[in-house]
Image (cartoon, rainbow, N blue to C red):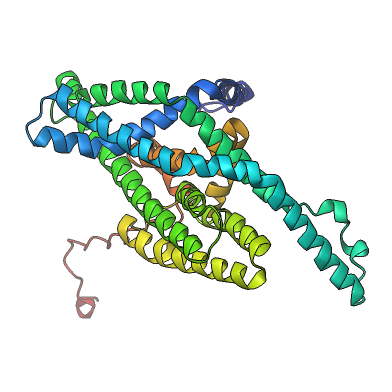
Length: 366
């Protein structure tokens, strides 16, 4: 018999939550062609907000500030497309040739091992090794990025409306809840932390892409601009992204020049990610803006299944934004702690209160 005042544990509520979650996930997967450009527009708008604030501080009217910000966004995207668009086309056309080169290298390696008495067929079958699959995956991801850029008009128009709305949103919140209400303060804090995270991550990713592209160009690896773009995009994924970004240029250097040059490419990528990813980025972001490695892995798997390769690129920023929002909600802060890479330091236990009673003199006892 259930005690009064204690809610009964029932299955229907759990089943309802599971069914609602599955329905939301199915909707996200079905609406991917619509939602992915919208999410890309949201990220663009968040990244452009500091520039919009700068134009407004200089005295520009709101429509003028929004227009100047959009011109800057269009200039950056157009410049990136001009620089990298040709490399994407050339790489996808040359992809079969590089795949054949990798297959020949694998066949030669297996033949050399067999000539030295290693029975490779007992360990692995030749049809199980597909070294060109990595380059094929890179080509597929780049084609999807190009497809996303083909929806550029939708993305830019959505970004324009988002910037126009966000520029007046604080005024609307202040008018609705009061200028010093908790809702306004919480929204300002969430917006500031999301902007800080995305701006810092974008800066580190851009620096990573520039250094990776320069290193590939110095070593003579084909399509250095392309590998710089790939390093920039994948750097949004902690740990795993830097590893995935380094595999294609290393394989390409192996096909072009052999193992010596490939090891040099690998060493350069390791040095860049060691300095930027393990030293500079934590110093700029702090320990709190981090995610557990298990959470990163599951978010990659989940968003990759829902939205494909582009979902994998957006997975960690999306999860990080959710974590920041959870941190600023008292009832869900425990979920943010579970998502964090480092548990917060526990506050010291309060000292027991001193007794106000007069001390008893044991010598006066009978």
